[in-house]
Length: 95
Image (tube, rainbow, N blue to C red; front, top):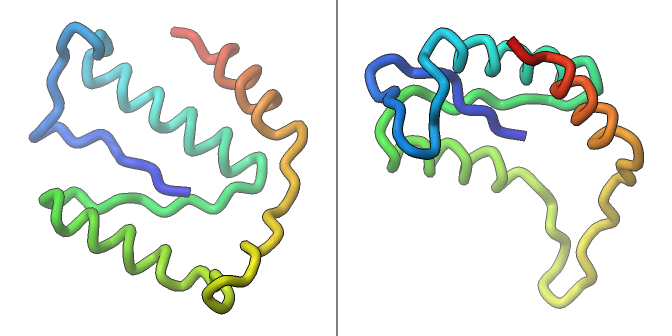
């Protein structure tokens, strides 16, 4: 799972993003804590240009074994309660 850290140099508010930077940092920290607590391995995106971020994601996803061409995709682990538990956890973190 990839997560983008708050980055003061490019942070801005707009009609869709109402959080100030301090609240964005708290939200990021809460997300990291919640995802980690529930067993997710996080990969933090670098604070760099878009091309470098794309390369970072490609390098990390290239290691995933997709099997031989034409073969069925590998079975993904079943996640049953995590999203709901995570959603409830994040809902409790209102400032």
